[in-house]
Image 1 (cartoon, rainbow over the protein chains, first blue to last red):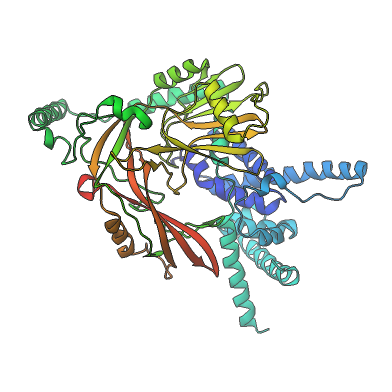
Image 2: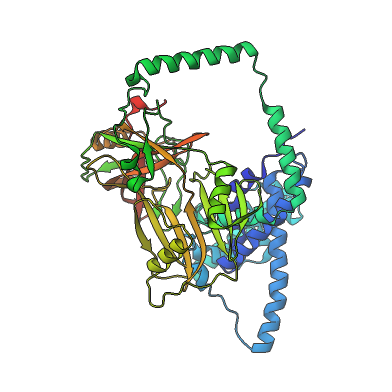
Amino acid sequence: MVERPAFEDLYREFLGRIYAYVRSQVGTSADAEDITAQVFMNAYQAYGRFEARHTTPAAWLFRIARNATLDHFRASGRRERLRRTIQHQPVVEEDPAGQAEERIQYQALMARVAELPERQRDAISLRHSGLSFDEVGKLIGCSEDAAKMLYHRALKALKEAVQREGV
Amino acid sequence: MSERDDDLELQALQRELDDAFATTRPRRDFEDELWLRMQAARPATNRLRDAIAGLLQGIREVPAVPAAAVATLLVVILGVGLFASMHPRLGGGGAATSNYNAEQSTRGAGADMAAVAFGRLPSPVFGDGTKTSQPVAPTITGDEYFGPAQFVWSGRLTVSTASARVYRYREPSTTDADQFASALGAVLRERPEGLLGSYSAATYNLNIRPTVQRPLSSPTYYVISSASMPPVDAAGASPADVATIFLSQHSLYPDWANAVMFTTTGDPIRVVFQRQFEVAAGTPSAFLVDANGDRYGIEVDLQGNRPILVAGMLPVRMDAAEYPIVSPDVAVQTLTSARPNDSPSTPPVAQLTQAELVYVLVAAGDHSFYEPAYLFSGKVQVGGKMYTKRILVAAVDPSQRNP
């Protein structure tokens, strides 16, 4: 039988990595905090059902994080479309509340990652969050080899975006 | 562009992505705040189940110690106690015992000098388990570099004492937490995992946490304002004044020496009462710092004149005893002669120009300590940019510390 680590150990170990993953997906640190909080709230409630022999804690937590991020996009997409329809306002990307305390060194590069198509963005973010290609593939629903190919295509697309638009 | 150049550029981009993901982190307080929220949100049935499971686990984990071993241990302890009482100078492992009385030492430091010293002391353990705060992996946060480095010292520090006080406190219990809360007029709601207690008052919730080993943290209380918390009635007062008035009104103003600092921008504005410890008679006080070298004590977050969160050191009764400390020169030598941790590449050279004597928390189970340390700081160049570099070195003489 595989022993489960204490949830607090998981929390302390993965909070920063999950936040970085989420931050690479969304536009603001405030959204990243909200989603990260939701991820760990959900994980905390579900930890009793987590079985270490079926998956690694990392893959389990990143699956929750990916689902929470997709939920966020769905909800915010609906809200934003509605708001823009009503107010005829452009997309707001500023995050004044979060900028003061944000601990992010490569803001421009992370912004370029966030602009990639969804699957490419996921492949880059999950891979550089420390997951294996096997784990990345399982999370986004493809084989390990397909995840590798997707990742390398994403890397080339990112390089071109960086050369075109700078970081 | 050749295929080889293309590959090299992709590899460089991969390294940059590694750095980007390794250094993107939430703001400093987010981890503790979220943990508290999670604890507070747990259903009562879960907490009861965990408490029972914890109790059962505790029972299972108690080792079966043979009665003969217990008897031997008691004899040894009694023997040492008798020997120490006949030879008081030996009781403290060679450390100087103090002649200060309780009233003198309570002023400013909130501590009683111990009748005997505490024996050999545990060594401070910094971020990655080393005896200095030299980390293994490079990390950059804001303007600060936390990675491994080689050190060159070109500053000057004179410390006018060869010994410094070490402070010891007993780990606070749930009874201590309840008494603290009761004195504030807060009522116990529950005891979530990881907290000594969670309490309610008319305008705020109060959570009390014991010493935490990782990340290392002193026993702390958190006052979390509810929507009914009124602003402090002090039009035109500075944030420091607003925080002081609030703490005084709620019997939370510290009885220890401190310096007050506050941010001038941002929402919320943060006021920090930085705690100071008396080092020795006739010596300037020293600030308490965390493992990163940041000063702490009580933090008050203000939105306008309305306090929204207070995080402060839980008052604990402390004993103090004087121990010999190494000179700044010896500490520098420790630093400059230390080999950086295993690293594939040569670490950057940090030019250290400033140093001060500080106090750091050393968590050690039932009793923990605040021990003196040297905090060195300077600049280091990494990737073409200049960063601040700080590093802590334990100050208590190694002969007085456990290996």
